[in-house]
Length: 108
Image (cartoon, rainbow, N blue to C red; front, side, top):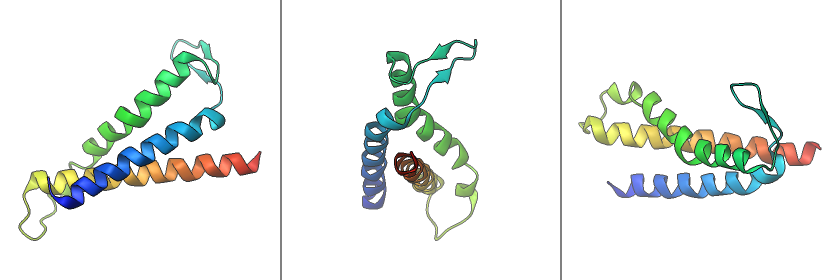
């Protein structure tokens, strides 16, 4: 793993933690697939938020990153391009989520 990927990984972790901290005040009620209501500050909602922020976004980023990594670029290996592109996607998603959460705090 090169230094750029390490910096990207640190950025993903920091943004995920920031999103987790701010989500406690911006998350509303939710519903399960069975139609049951989950209250905003319930343990189930916290668990779902943690799972999404730390696993779901990264998994989707790595799946979406498969295609852009196929584009040839300066003789880099596919794995190196895949990790770099996937981490860029994860950072972008976390930044957008953070900005939306911050804007939600000010709109109230």
